[in-house]
Amino acid sequence: MHKAVFLDRDGVLNAAVVRAGKPYPPDTLDALEILPGVPDALARLRAAGFLNVVVTNQPDVATGKQRRDVVEAMHDRLMRTLPLDAIEVCYHVEADHCACRKPKPGMLQQAARELDIELPQSFMVGDRWRDIAAGQAVGSACFFVDYGYDERQPQAPFITVKSLPEAAALILSSTQAG
Image 1 (cartoon, rainbow, N blue to C red):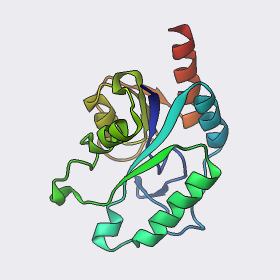
Image 2 (image 1 turned 30 degrees about the vertical axis):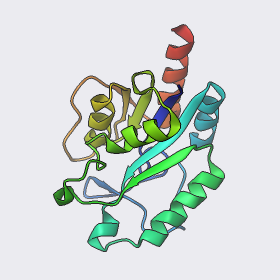
Image 3 (image 1 turned 120 degrees about the horizontal axis):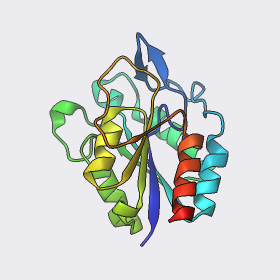
Image 4 (image 1 turned 90 degrees about the horizontal axis):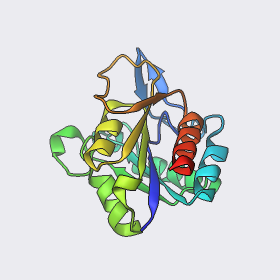
């Protein structure tokens, strides 16, 4: 079985667009900006034997605010330019009551089935309470990238970090010590 680092997309891999204290995804492929240190952090995680798996809610497709082909073009670019192993996407809105939309753990469980991932030996890195709740639901240790958004905060346990590179350093030091 493999161990993985599950990664939210917007705010972890690429810059989120923050308006009135709330984060939003970039709306065009040109607006997709990889955050500093992300490529190196992912490369170090992969070199240590982790699978890098993106798990992202993209409800703007269901609401008509975003086109699915634009989201897929963003994911194609991320897969080509970053050391990622898979991208799991939920296009649903809350009202759909699907099993995949975070905070539900469906995307993590799907990736675990497809990639033979041992969830309790894996990690979740996210910048919203939904990410942390999804990771907690499968028994993965969670890292919260805290940007101070004006929204609900996650419930403990989690470790607060400033970025994916900081989370990766902590993951790597904890797995080397253990």
